[in-house]
Length: 252
Image 1 (cartoon, rainbow, N blue to C red):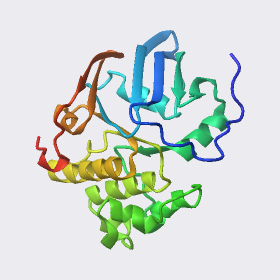
Image 2: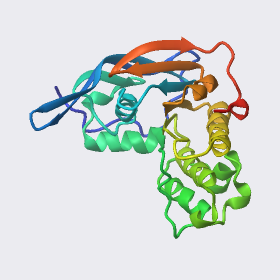
Image 3: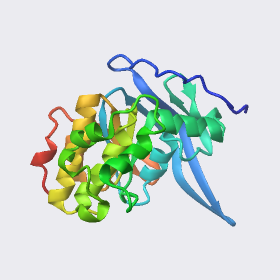
């Protein structure tokens, strides 16, 4: 199969109309080989994600959630199957094209914040705005996550939840079409985790960013438009929430 060595994404593509698929994944299989042992992380997954929707990927450890998210985000490639982002086949991209895709179109939020200790919150966010094509100003991005008054503080002067919100601001400062969050509340207590989820839902609502949140916590699924449950590398169920719950009303 030919691999794409360049991608015509010099200008931001227009937002898809309501209901249009941003991602179309078909038959996604991922096998990790460790010596003679094969680990099947994903087993023929079909998945669509739509413009501006909030999706929760729910399942226990080892169900394939992170592998699926990494493939959608261009951090990993499937063993078999195809992933289309709009009209681009990510599975044909070479490393350089995947790097451009991640830089221009995807924001990532992980369980651990990965902030640079010697930089202020605003400076940590500016690391992304310096390479983005049409970034939000760092302080505006921090304001979106409720940290306008903490912009000049260093990570050591911030709580865990505040550091995670700085990481969210950094992810969204480049105005990504897609925000992928891998257990963003996993290292936080309930009160702090709710603040982080409020920041994520604010981004989804105000910027129209297609957002996928990985969690093993079923309570968090109440904030989603759709809940996609994974088990043993397969999609076990897909549910639509007729009445979403505000993040601030969650408790677990």
